[in-house]
Amino acid sequence: MSGNAIEIEGLSKTYAAHSGEPAKTALQDVNLEVPAGSIFGLLGPNGAGKSTLINILAGLVRKSAGNVRIWGFDHDVNPRQSRAAIGVMPQELNLDPFFTARAALDVQAGLYGVPKRERRTEEILDLIGLTDKADAYSRTLSGGMRRRLLLGKALVHRPRVLVLDEPTAGVDIELRQMLWSNVRKFNREGMTIILTTHYLEEAEEMCDEIAIIHQGRKIAHESTDTLIGQLDAKSLLIHPTQPFDGDIRLPEGVELEHRPDGALALSYRRGQTAAEDILDAVRAAGIRIADVATEEPHLEDVFLALTSSRGTGGEEVA
Ligand SMILES: Nc1ncnc2c1ncn2[C@@H]1O[C@H](COP(=O)(O)OP(=O)(O)OP(=O)(O)O)[C@@H](O)[C@H]1O
Image (tube, rainbow, N blue to C red):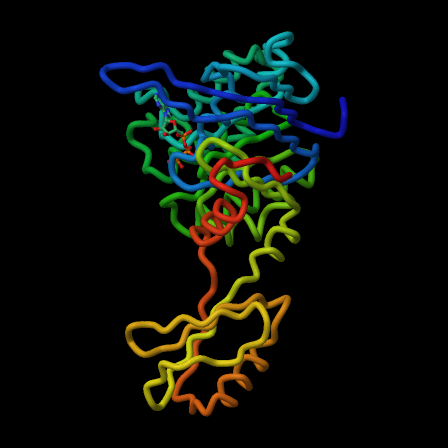
């Protein structure tokens, strides 16, 4: 195996037209390499194509074109081995309501051909904190417990790669902490982790590398440090004591926007300009400052910045 847990080349997916809906291209010519042993973030706005990509990896959706290798096994040549190398915790709570938690894990292990003596059902129940709910039917479990059970199901066959699709959307703090401490533990033990999320902060905290998918294309793939470094756009929001509608001689790269409420929004890059220099320029224009605040970029801004600066044609930049 190369040093990559996942290798994707020219991956495209078009969902066929159905029930009056036109055909929909969800992924277009995506190339992606996920290093073995990393925690990898797949980010993108709603409908970007993240779940489609994950479902292709999991063998749940058929690709239209391209190649996928998981742990060195080609999806088309060695489908069984490539599926066995990956475990997916899906977004939807798609559990069979008539199975108990223990049975759900046992059946899943059976589906993956794990011999009875090698099954780790009790160990996994303990890991996901469901030992005392082992005999409860999944329909009686709370939303958080069902999510834990989905994590357990993804682990029954000891996958090399664990994929978590939006694992923290709408979950409480306790479950979030349980998830992240387990993810870190699995990763220390050598498991490669891929997670999708809408939350940039979460990806920043957890991931070694981040890829951003937008309208079915990969528009960025960087180490987390490099990506966050590029996203150092910030704004100073200055409320003058007197209305001001003139111009200010600003340091290079700083842009002024007059807000309807009279505030002056000065956008700049932290790596390029010191806030102090902007404040000096504002004072030099004779403006007295009543109040000052800062605005951080949102992930939406990041997507906008990346898509507009790199063209809506979406050419790849990684
Ligand atoms: N089974 C399907 N049939 C037709 N179109 C689909 C199907 N599944 C997804 N799509 C479309 O493909 C595009 C990508 O969807 P996908 O669910 O992969 O995005 P996503 O990035 O996972 O979004 P979200 O974060 O909302 O889950 C969307 O436009 C979606 O409407």
